[in-house]
Length: 397
Ligand SMILES: Cc1cc2nc3c(=O)[nH]c(=O)nc-3n(C[C@H](O)[C@H](O)[C@H](O)COP(=O)(O)OP(=O)(O)OC[C@H]3O[C@@H](n4cnc5c(N)ncnc54)[C@H](O)[C@@H]3O)c2cc1C
Image 1: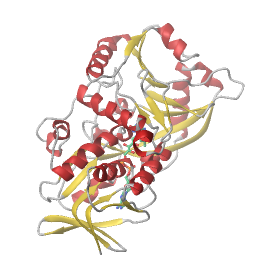
Image 2: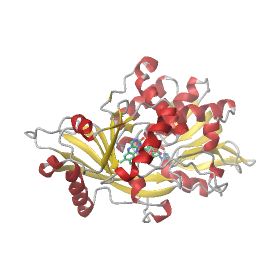
Image 3: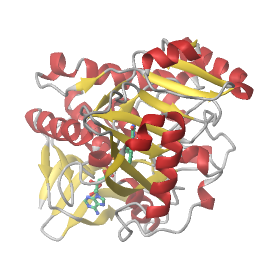
Image 4: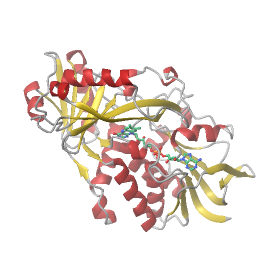
């Protein structure tokens, strides 16, 4: 048996960020239990895009804080997380002009520098771009992307350097509850007893909580993506993070010839309840051919040079969607001492540094900021879901 101050299930960006911030705030013994290796879940497979152009100022502010976290990471922790700053180019259609302007204004109120640009300027930013006459564009120069597995692994190293114990290959099998309070986590090897217990197990966390009678609306959704490549002799490359509301695709450069391409899932499905049933522990890990062919056709509509491109490799992953596309950050009312940070809905890389800092304050100092309160579990039954999606202007990928 091991006695901890805080034990965290899940070694993705969420669990690791919470662990790092706990140690920064002076928490004592902090342990992360990860059933595989750090980043084995969604974190290692993300696109790793961080941008703040969303139509909700508090959310934009959280995103900007996360961007600053990665920008200042090396100065702060002495280890680099390399990132690229190609900027974020958003394409939509003229009927969405008002929504795009409101998005720019909301994000701008939080300090995000983004503006409408002309088709000519867009084509200069991304040579080879061809959108219809009614296309409209916004550009956020400060947006970045990073290698998600590299970032997760550096977070794990930094966490260890700060004194966090990370047990990999360590499957959590039970949440210990004593006298109505969470008392730690049980694994096949040993019990990790702790005053505070955190679940950062993404889509699996909902099932783990359900066993204790705590219902958290996190729905698994299988999403498909692909790396496409141009031929070496092609004069064109993807130069920007590009989110295209007209084709429902988003993409970012990957090395010199490739690009990561995914679907703007939030725009494709109206409600998480519409998602096809998927077993997050057993699903097909590559794209279907038909989806891929559709993806390449759409990609080539906006970037005609991709007619000569090819699929380099594909994969599929399960997202953890909530009804409003924002995570649920809370303590279980019926099991004091049991905290959870789940349901990032495809945006966890951009939010987890901010989540780590507010959850650590909640755990260490019992401080619930207004933004943390906004993401409480009860918001769904209280009719206080976060309103921030805007399909036309571009929101989550
Ligand atoms: C294809 C794709 C592209 C994405 N692109 C972006 C992007 O560009 N920008 C962005 O902000 N976000 C993006 N995301 C979302 C982002 O990756 C996730 O929101 C984020 O990684 C979630 O982090 P997490 O730590 O909550 O979950 P995870 O990384 O899934 O970590 C949870 C961990 O818990 C572990 N676990 C589960 N059960 C147990 C157990 N019983 N015992 C021990 N360990 C357990 C798992 O093995 C896993 O490692 C993308 C996601 C995908 C799939």
